[in-house]
Every structure is written in structure tokens, then in C-alpha cells.
Length: 247
Image 1 (spheres, rainbow, N blue to C red):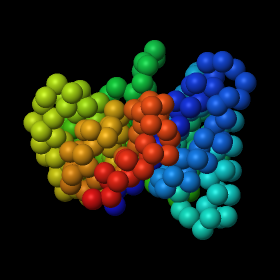
Image 2 (cartoon, rainbow, N blue to C red; image 1 turned 90 degrees about the vertical axis):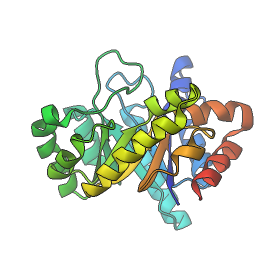
Image 3 (cartoon, one colour; image 1 turned 120 degrees about the vertical axis):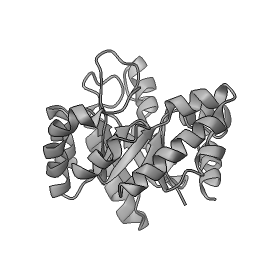
Image 4 (tube, rainbow, N blue to C red; image 1 turned 90 degrees about the horizontal axis):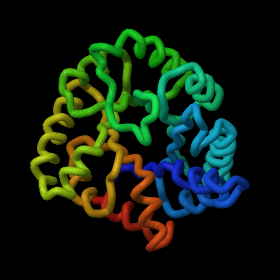
């Protein structure tokens, strides 16, 4: 079964838009975990427009206690730009996975992957530092095949394929054509001995096709899952995602 890691950024965004503690991030995250997911994802941006540093600590404590109490293994994935602030958080909390993402100033959401021909020298020592303390490392990449052997060479365990373009193509009637492009990329990544995650704008329509991707281990989904839950409810929405990923 492909793992579902729910990105809870959007819950924090709603809370921060009003101030205070409603919706309560911990309460909602526990509901999500009780719904059967395999992971929780956060992206603590430097402007703290959604997830704050305090949130990362609170969620780390919650997941650890939840797993111990319920004898489960729900993973904690922290993603973000590999800068000092992010690394300090990750090295302190030691989540199961750190997903390194290129961030450009002013972006609304992540919209591009690393160019490893350019970024490999900066990333290699960072990846080593994370892996030395037992953190699995994924790199946020597009379908550019040339990046995959480099990702392996600099020590990454996984890649996360940026699926925004696939979601857009799917909505414009070009889903199969786009999927074949991702399938070719996935096979190249597997050949480079990388495990595969995916994320961005995957929903219960396009995921029925995309979950067939070769070697797919995990999908990280936030905005569309939380948005749909406003209509259907959080637990039923998660169950629908899990049902698609089960086969």
C-alpha cells in the first residue's frame, strides 16, 4: 500500500488567519491520525504563515506519544528550504523524514524542484548531516531525468516528484499523456536506486491514475485534501484517499 502523509499546513493557515487557537492543530492532527494515515507532513516556512516552530515541536511530541500509546508507526515528515533555521528544527526534532525543497521569495506554494547540477555542492553536506542522525532524506524534484543519478550520488534516499504539472494536465484532459511522462521519470529514478514520493495537488480524481506510478512509496497531500474535507468531513475524505491508495 502507498503511504498517505497528510500535510496539515492548511489547518494552521486557518488558525493564523484569525489568531488564537481555533482550529486547534493538535486536535485536528489527532483526528487525522485516527483516520488511518501513515504520516504527518509540515512545512515550517520562515515567515510562519502557517506552521510555526512551536507547532513542529508540539506535533513531534504528539506523534511520539500517539505512536507509543497506540503501538503504531505514523511517520513525521518535515519539509522546507535547507537553510539554518530549517536544519536547526530538523536536527533538534529528528523526524523520520526530511524533505528538502527549493524555496523562492514570495512564492505562494512550492512550484519547482531542485536543479541538482547547480545545487548538489550545497546539498551534499546537508544530506550527510541529516542522515548521520538517522533521518531519511528526500529531495523535491521535477521529472528531469538528469537529476536522479546526482540525487543518488549526493546521498538522497528518496525523491518527491512535484505533481503540480500533472494535476494541471489532468484537469485539461491530458492526464494520461502527463502520467506517461512521470512514469518514465519514475523508472529512471528507480534505476538510480531512489525511492519515490510524490506531492502537490493530488486529489481523489487524479490520484486514481497517479497511484499506479511505478515504485511510488508515499504521497504527501494537504491543500486539496483539507479543501475537500470542508464538504465531506475530514475522516470520510481521508478514508476515500486511503481506499484509492490501497490497490
